Length: 229
Image 1 (spheres, helix red, strand yellow):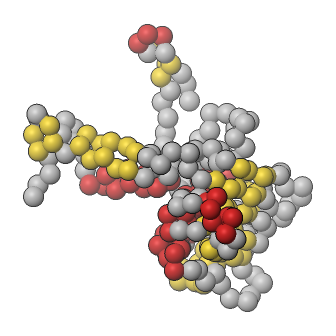
Image 2: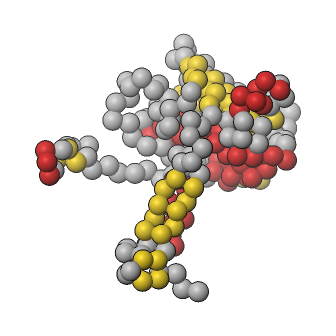
Image 3: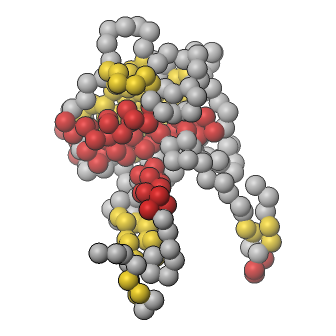
């Protein structure tokens, strides 16, 4: 990233966005947010791997990942993660296609579980979640469907940032988070600018990754109506 001078003396930083769920590039990997997750989670317990094999391994030599049985509330998030894990990272996907967990010790587990403690449910609310990363397991704990989706986004970012930065091991971590703001939106103005359907779908992918929950689609203005009905 090379700063360029802009109007008023501010810096313009050209940024290449990676594909959704494949991570973003951090300007400062040593920043106070050790995970690189955006927005920064409320609680993060993380430690650097003390030896090879002491974190969650990425790459072609790592054991395949399989989804454990999931509760009904996690159905849509589980399907999303299943599709993602069988295609990412390109060339060495985490999971095998059409697989669920069995008793084989050669597989690692991706588990989605309901929060059981009443105190945890109250703290998590509608969109809170926990993500736990260990050597043999990735686990998401939530109380609602929305919470499982927020946890899935954090998991995708956590692994994606590590992959983008060239790290083959994701340190063991316990992340506990809930949104600070109930309304987290983005607006797309198509009254003045034209965008293909593929771009709109891409934008929705980015909304998922960064946990935005309101899509304001500005369809019409003085310039005209841009949606064919």
